[in-house]
Image (cartoon, rainbow, N blue to C red; front, side):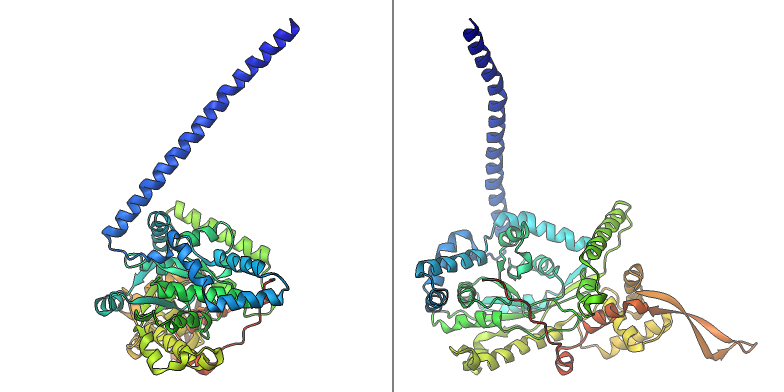
Length: 503
């Protein structure tokens, strides 16, 4: 009897526990089915949106093309030789070297997702940029180019690099025209950023990584997607500027892009679009300028983390109280497109098989791009105000500030002005809240010995001065208005060699 009772109790317990388990399984199945339906509907909606807006999507960066990319990369003589060299140097088999090359390629290749890009990424980018800035883009150059360029033209945007927000800004500004594939640095190779950037069409590159096999795979991949018409965005300076001025252009990615023209089958015209970016406020400006001072004067990581938390908390509180103020302008402009085929015809050495033989021509092409970026660089209120205070070096009254802005506008008519404000007084009113909120400028009193009251006492004027503790930021924003020729004549500071990544 006790055995029968125990069996019945066990069966009852099983039935009692089985019902919730079945319910849980049914709920999970329902969730998965709904998720699959939402994914299918979302993709269809994204495709309809893309077709309706006539947005160009490069088919070669879609997932179904990965096999084609792999076939072309591993069919390259350069990659085959690099695999053999890797096996010999590391005393390993060809199979092991090939697996390592495939690992590199999987790391690089994007996983572009229409739904993620058009229904998640684009609205999110728009919300972020319009929340933080007053974004402005000059479309005339692009419209003129699109009206005259051949339909099969391959386009690469070469961009100056001021902030990590550049990725969001340029993608948002070009959203209605094309989806960009960015060359993204190793800073984004962390979860979940690595998946997000790949879904948005980005491909990762390891800077200062000296492995010949890796560079053979990367160069062949870049040449392959270029030949197959993928529209790319490349930061030609390599990294973020620390002092606000232009940096010396890097030749690596430009070399990989132009190398596609060695293939006789690549007959489509290739164009480089110089793209210039400028901000009234760069979000990471303090971290960047801090690298210019000695290590003993820098903040610790905990200090930086605390500053970031305070920054987010204050802005969240201001948003809740509806007192948040945007950080001024974020402007994107475009220089005159450069036809690579014409440059190759004039400088055939740029396609030489030996790097030293083509380096001079590559340098000339890179500097031509930088000159176009420099000519297209937009003026913003804060950068102009920083330039004026840097030149003056002393407190200035509001009238003097306004007069100085007007003089700069008169002498700099050849610069790009896309500001809504058209007078010195209006530009001062636009810049003042941005710098005053950050305590970059402060009220000051100035004695005017040339003006006396009836009692013979010098007159005290109300003026403004740049905060003496913030001269690094003053120079950072002032330097952004330096032309490329001025920076080149001044010379570029030598970069400290970064430690090479472990193999």
